[in-house]
Image (tube, rainbow, N blue to C red; front, side, top):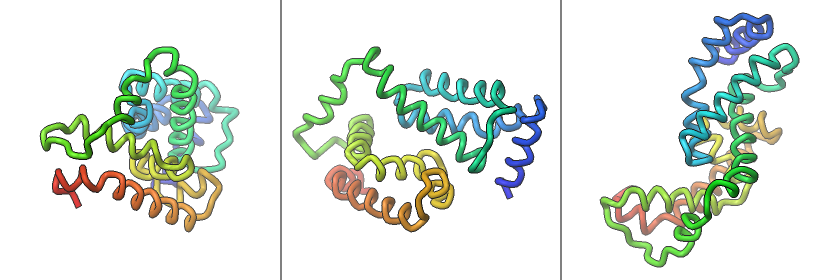
Length: 186
């Protein structure tokens, strides 16, 4: 149902309908920003990336041909722009000391009130997943995409998405089992 509404909305945007664009923006801006923030770990950069995506859609609306739904298009754009930022821009602006500190953690035990450290460990565990597995996990858990949407977006089968999610969850559970036990998360 939402896909049909989104297709109608996008057709109106292609015609230059400002109200349709505003509805699309209001519907997806927050989730795109949150998804992007989960990848780049910087809310300001995430907002800039989300804004760039919507500006691009408006400016290039007549030329954009969707082969997936608009939601998949938005999340794919966010993922790609985030990856580009992480590869090209982040090294220019940020030292890698945080990443090295996480990699060098010696103790698997953390205090129950140290949620920031747990968040870093979780992100490190996600980052340690194989690329395909990580991308699928992030699109599902942070992007809110269904397995079918992920399969269409990545041009793979739904079964492959299911298998990769299973692998990701098993690896994350294993990597984080000591930490999660300390938080009584099962």
